[in-house]
Amino acid sequence: MSTEDKKQGEREESGEGSGGISIDLGLGDLFKGIGNFVEMAASLADKVDLSELDAEKLAKLQRASQTRVGGIPRGVYGVSVRRGVGGIPRVRSFGNIRRTERGPVAHEVREPLVDVFDEGDVLLAIAELPGVEEKDIRIEVHGDLLKLSTTTKGRKYAGELQLPCPVDETTVKSAYKNGVLEIRLRKTCGEHSRTSRDAEST
Amino acid sequence: MTEKRTKRKEGIQIDFGLGGLFKGFGSLIDLISDMAEKGESEVSRHGEFKVNGLDQARGIYGFSVRMGLGGTPTVEHFGNIRATDEGPVVAEAREPLVDVFDEGEWILVVAELPGVEKDDIQIEVQDDILSLSTAGRAKYVREILLPSFVVPATMETSYRNGILEVRLRKTS
Image (cartoon, rainbow over all chains, first blue to last red; front, top):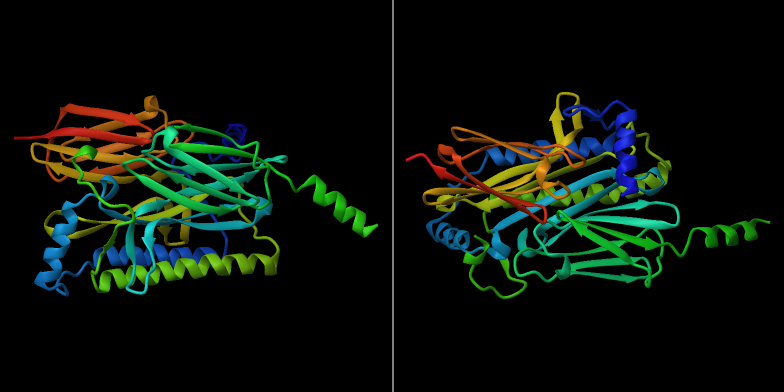
């Protein structure tokens, strides 16, 4: 919660508090890449060409449209970009479209959007898991690997995330509200590793 | 609405098999994966990027594909990265992921609004346009074109676990 409040505070300080203000990312090539992505996706959306489809494929599609996978027959793919730990921009993908040899395929299980914040002694992971019940969320931690999954009948999520630092597996705290899961993990690197590095340099 | 679904085995895959369109998506996904990888290596080369005033801001861009009525695939965008003449910019408010279902006499709109409090959701309906916005920490904004005109007075809403459902009766 403190991070969220801080976030709000910083936005207000920098005068971005009012809605609709755009921020120029100025990230150079990385964002030119995303620009291309946005344009390509937009042009694809305009160019849905059904003439390539034969009757058999169309019938298959119509059947597929009547089956709801996880409540919603849909492919989702997205990327999030943010300034991550240490000021490094992080690009993460999420969604349920995966590459296969036969081309992209929509899975039933969606990879959630997850952000990780370094808060000194703890890492805060925030995952967007809309449409699940708190009791159905499973969190596993092994060293610096965080695993999330849900067992709900409806929407299904699963994701694995490499944390910037190993964490204590026994002090995992989590809270779920309005579709957002917050996990606090105590770091087991940081102070210790810094001390040992200092020791090496002297 | 979710109860109508038929029982499915776990791990089922839908092969879109849509030819050119999805080949296009395939290459988009390749592009983004490459970018993610290159982004990392570039970071290690340059040490740090200069980020203009967005210490905590996040850019999100995504698309959803679904089979619409009659097997026509519809592609929708969501997120807060918008293309402008000066390149992509990150807006404060995010366009949510929205699905619209035609249920005979009713239209069902399902929007993903994670992080929003129920009281912060504002919905306006006029003719066949539903305007959705949220106040508070997580900001979303979206105008949705409905498949038919609806009666605003018939609106029923529910919000739970980050999912908003809006039901509206079509104008007869």
